[in-house]
Length: 121
Image (cartoon, rainbow, N blue to C red; front, side, top):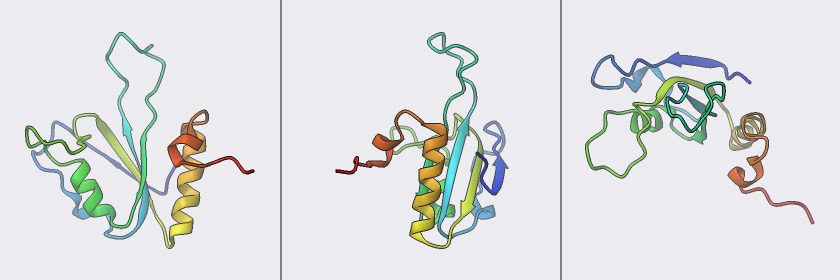
């Protein structure tokens, strides 16, 4: 499943991530990763992306993809991320619906747990 916009990342490039090319509005985004180089996973198993929604895409991606500051406990995906896809949304319902569809596509076995969906009575 593809989102509207895509942007490739270069981890060996400049020392600081430039988030000014992203819109400063609400969006749903996916951060995709390279294949793992560990012996635990088979080489044909792709890693699923990091999926989320946000009210300010520029600020959120700037926080997730900035250069690491050493002993910070904040999530930092800069070394592992290879490209970002995003779709601007107009309402919170649209964002939830798109996140639901993406979660069902990338995480078919665990999307209910990830989205905290309870089964109907």
